[in-house]
Image 1 (cartoon, rainbow, N blue to C red):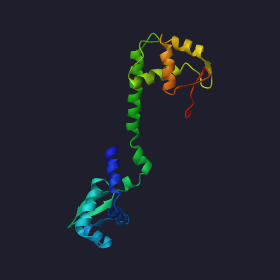
Image 2: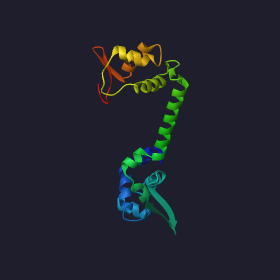
Image 3: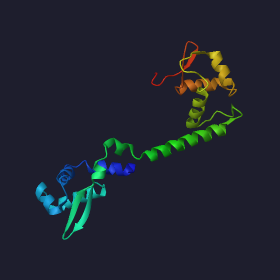
Image 4: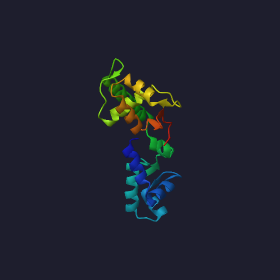
Length: 187
C-alpha cells in the first residue's frame, strides 16, 4: 500500500457514517437498501459513502441478482495501524539501499588514496565525509586538540575546518581543549 493510499484510507475513516457502515458490514455482507434502513440514512447517502469506502479498499462490491452486495475487505482491516503507517518493508529496504549506494559514491568520488580531495560544499555530502572521518575516533575517549589535528591532517590539509565542522554538525563535542565523539542524544 502506497503512502497516498494510506492517507486516503485514514481520510475515509474520519467520517461517522463510514464508520457506522463498517460496523454494520462487520456481521456480514449487505446491500444498499438494507444498510440505509439500519443506519436510518437515505440510499443515496449510503451509496455515496460506500463508494468512498470502496475507493479506499475497505469494502468490495459484487452484483448478486438485482442487488449490489457490499462486503468488508477483512484482509485490509486485519492489518494493524502501525503496519499501514510503516508501509511495505521492501520499499523501506530499497530506500535504505539507495542511501547506502549514494553514500558509497560520495566517498568514492571525494577520497583518493585515503586522502580527502576536497571538503564538499553541499551539506549532505559534507556530513557523509565527516561521519567517515569520525570513524577514526573512539567513543568515550577524550582527545586533546593536537591529537585531533594530527588525525584529521592525515586526511586533509585543512584540518581546522574539518574539526570545526565536526563540532558544528554535532558529531564531536569540545570542552576546555578536549574533543570527543558525541553519544546519541548528548546535548
